[in-house]
Length: 60
Image (cartoon, rainbow, N blue to C red):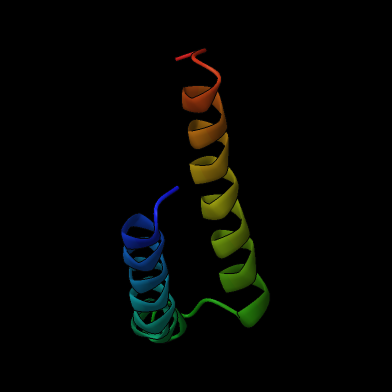
């Protein structure tokens, strides 16, 4: 992986990390508990990583 791509991916990760607070606040206002928010975050991360892994191994 070249240096420029690495920096772009770091920037994207930082931006997504910063935006998560907006979604968490919205979920709390909708009545979700902190445990439910964590479950949603973990489930979403699992799905993205599963899709990425399957795409990387050419299964999809």
